[in-house]
Length: 480
Image (cartoon, rainbow, N blue to C red; front, side):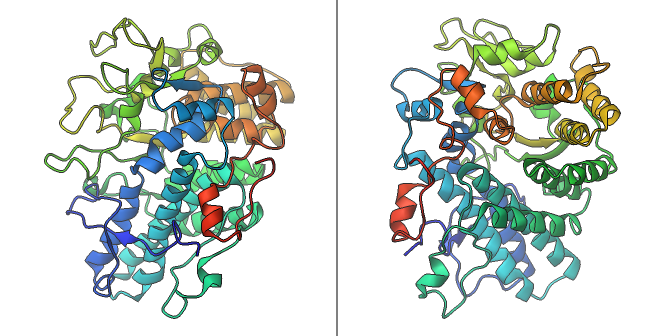
């Protein structure tokens, strides 16, 4: 039966700090989901899963970034050679990272469903209960958004099977829902979450999903569906919450710059002495300079370097060059195997390495600059050139560039797409998906030398292991 990722999973224990959560643990017992503390622990486990290897490291980077024109595999020949299959689009349905990514996303969805199925039955403060349910809906939507962009329509699991249902194959072994059905559920979850989540939290709970996170993520979901007026309306609501652009672009990606004025949502990572498995991330370690900071994966391409205009301050903040000296005084070795690395993943050497390099580095998922670029794109499609230029130029001027004074709709479309690339490069994993939604993945990626086949490689294959586990209920994407 189809049990691997959709089956009833476990909740883990955690300390009073909601960061201190391991994503895996013991199966849920009858004694759980009885108290308000259980409800909080259950939601915290969803946050813990965000840092899980399959969610934030190799699989995520392979699918979202190495498959794009922004980066190549990197590291050294022979190390994780399977990552080349994503770089070259030669992968098949049996490649292991695909199954890992699928499992990681569904593990999070299962944790969210555990909350949504069980927390309503707990006697507790109603306002806190509603907030926790809204957090679970936010994350269920976030992970389904990752899945639908990667695989297309996927099984739409919205609840935990109840007693009596757990032996029913039709309950456990769901077929693929349509892309439209998945997107409709994502929109519903984010809309409902945005109506409940607070705009801010006390300092001790910094990093939890907010109203701005739900509205901003919903704007992105609508962007991918080309619902332009909805994007504008949602971006207006996000701006009304008080987000602004940080003055210094480079500072955004340093530990001191976490949760700055434009940060809308970040995946929290924090070294907890004596508990190194709890709440740190390997996202940055995987991408650190090999032989000095990390393993050296995700090598920025020369094409990405050349995409930055002369004088664009974002170049030095995005690309870490072999032999350079960082603003913090680290000299990048001339012996590094690759000429370039992701500077957004760089953490200075003076930061604690107790749990390994860069385990404290938060992963930036959504910033106000992206909301501005989403509104610029939507406004341009709606014919509101002035709004599009205003939003575009706020981002450009912050980067040290001259504003764009005028452009036709098609010219402005290309400029905004370009701006989105250089503003968000190597950061939140949207580049490949952006090329697909813009209808130019084949053109751009073939020009980059990739073996991209139109009509096939816009989606990744459904993992063969999941098809086998489903007894053939799951169908494969075309061409695989």
